[in-house]
Length: 586
Image 1 (spheres, rainbow, N blue to C red):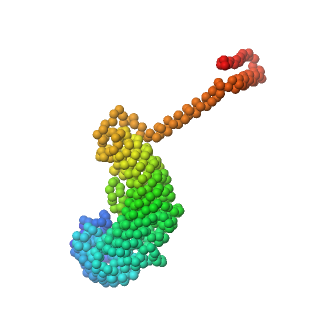
Image 2 (cartoon, rainbow, N blue to C red):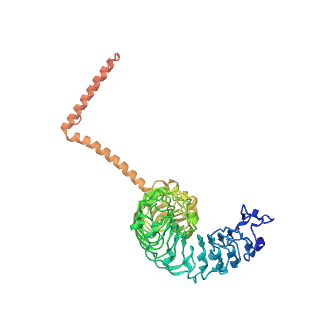
Image 3 (cartoon, rainbow, N blue to C red):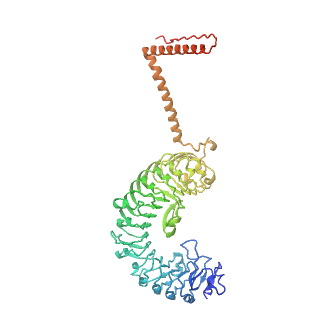
């Protein structure tokens, strides 16, 4: 009996497996007409895709031969349970109605049975083995000829399975990540019209990507070749795939100007449905040119770290309204930071396709490089280690959902924006190694989640703000290289600067602008006064004409005033004397 093949069931998942009506058991589904069992789902969800199984996993010494009695089974999922290094049994190859088979993260070891090639209706096959499961020796195969008959297969994951001796590897596989494959990419790999995903990352592949392919009816939406030794340029045809959602070519040796010429009008536009473009750690060059961006452009992750890109950060990038990660660090970019970046929300909750792909990207946040799932990426702007100049745009403080901001190792001047505290979701802020001056705004202490801060090697001065989350950041190196700073956690004490009197929301630029405003007003008033008075003093003819005009006007007003009183019938004597004295003797 199937239940008895599991020696441990910590979560009592099989507690409902009693009685004769198996269609009512948890994890079992039957055909509504025939009553045959067509689905068995005992998947144990892990805390991470990197783990094999957990304390809540069921334990078995191997798949029971009683499985073969489920002749009409279409769906079998045993992922994440502990099968103690047992082999995948050959009899699974006789369950010919199977369309979905998932034995991943199950602690299986030994050869992949070629009898799996008998499952001609199979559309989904997942045998991937996380590294932590390889204590059992892992799965391996010396040939993939058995897969040539799986004509309906649309998803195949054999990640970390050992197949270094399999010479026919590339003919059928979609996921060959970390399998020990080496050598040049064969040309026939790119007959991709039948595949939707192609993942060959983490191997020792060399050679270049083909400059031309035939892709009639191609539905490829994920291409992941990262962490190999590929050379050459990124071909133009890649930017013309209408279905491509994810392109990850990072950690190779690719070169050339990827965003110039034909690619400039396609890769960074809304003509395709690209969600992720990761070209980190290559030798790509040229300017980052952006074509005409469509209003519905869906780009969410743009990662170009560690290349040789030059020129400015173009404001056209701000047209990608769905961006959540902008990684342009470690290049040779020049010019100023576009103010329009503040109009993008960088919403980390923006889901989309990357939440379904299992794509992993590398990001540096909190000063540490992490590999995270695409849907787990922090909302991030990283422009560090370039040649950027100018000030930090005040508009960046409008990005309320930003979680990481790194502008370090540039040539930025000016002050830290007074409203930096508006970035309520910020976890990491690095402004180190610039030429930023002024005080540290008190509003910085209002950011509740900040756990990584680096303001070192600038020209900051004044007391270090205290309170709230800043109280937990006690490493003096955060503020090192700023001789004008004082107060905890630095040993230098502040003198005659009561913390309560610090003008937190007013930086030195505001004060300077106010002083210039008042000076201009005073200059204007003084100039106007002396233009009139000075002229009267110097020109006697103008002075006489001016006083005659004043005397005539006064007389006219007096006459009109007297006639107005007579018309009201009021009998009253008014003595009105007008004397005009010319005090100046010249």
